[in-house]
Length: 399
Image (cartoon, rainbow, N blue to C red; front, top):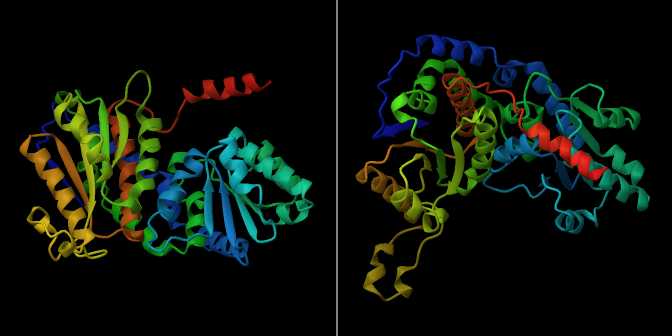
């Protein structure tokens, strides 16, 4: 993974030495990253995941926010998509009903994930399938085919899991949902999907073992310069469909961590090349209050070949002997060069290949970057107090 900044001022007005030490100490002690060193836990998780998924034609995963997005970011990198796994993070009543009303309970496994065990959306999903199973005389098999990941504490989900003797894995209480991708929350689906967990963890180790190097490359180092406080938006543009859910995961990681006390920089995920045709006009010709990160990878020569002969038109002779990958490569290079020419402050994060090791690096670096940015800006990276009000009101409106 290579990270390069362009037209960016890294001359700090104030020394960050003391803060750097605090950040490094925080990262070194962070269970969300240190969990990769627990080999016994990993082996136990592998055994549970394999036993749970054996002889299942489909695995349905219920969970929202941090209980979903990290796992999807990992599952998203598989070039040969595993149709065995289906994620349900929302509760749209029509979509949910149409998707699951004809469930074959004998051949389907259900992974239920909620750190607190009280997440209304996840409890509703679980109870709706419980009701369907009961109505179709499938309750016993439904309960046998469930794996629940939650904290081992007094909660509705934990209590019903114990009462119904469901298979249980503990959600580490010291790991917040948005930081849980390397715990069983992300790893169980990854194992079922066939990812190489050793390679994934090797990528994470690369970041941990070189923490000072990557801290100096983090966005927080740039934003901590008071001259750069003009930015209102943190734009991430990903140039690979296999990084789509990484972008969604990054949005939650950044937004829930840094947006506090009337402070924060709004994250926006754009997709290259699609959003070049919908957002690039604003980015290039609108207010210069945005910092841009382009996540790129090697596309040249990949994919289907473009048949230039069918056009019989010299205006499209640039397609001659080219592939879809060549076009993608040219588009990402052209966008970056346009930002260079117009003197925008931005960076390119290049990963040579979308695979387990590189996604491990990318996810771990994003955690380091987010935590360091919060500490530089005087914000607690691990809580999310504002969302609690809407959770309470939801329950009020239902009563």
